[in-house]
Amino acid sequence: MGQIPINFFTEDISFNIKQRGLVRTWIRNTIIAENHRLRLLNFIFCSDAYLLSINQQYLNHDTYTDIITFDNSDIKQEIVGDIFISLDRIRENAKELNINEIDELHRVMIHGTLHLLGYPDKGKSAKALMTEKEDLYLSKRAF
Image 1 (cartoon, one colour):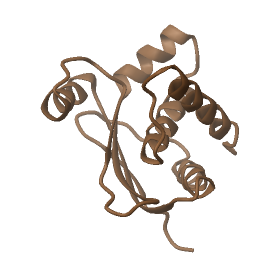
Image 2 (cartoon, one colour; image 1 turned 60 degrees about the horizontal axis):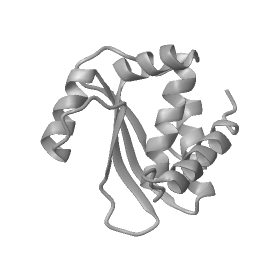
Image 3 (tube, helix red, strand yellow; image 1 turned 45 degrees about the vertical axis):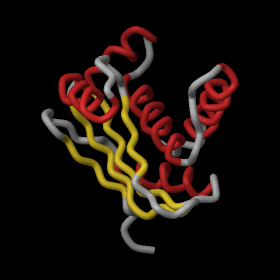
């Protein structure tokens, strides 16, 4: 089948995602289950400061966030994207929610993937559906 076109990068931090093969398969299977085709997906892990600068530069938001997703696809039902994730926010969220950091990281990763699949999270019903989809795909992790 070949290499799954999901890459992991870091910007201004040092981080290695654990079980990257299993994570790639899980994300790819989510995309397939949603009737999309995976072309290229990059996860870029960074600090709060780095993601804040992206938020300011590209979205004109002057706030910290855990994730910013860029959809770079030109073709409907095809996934080409970059997902930037602040590990500072992941750690802070996990601490506040009293959950495992890896579980929070995976939730945010699938959240960004769901955005690329066309799921919004603005408004009560959209947010509820997003959470439902996150829970569904998190339950399908085989690791």
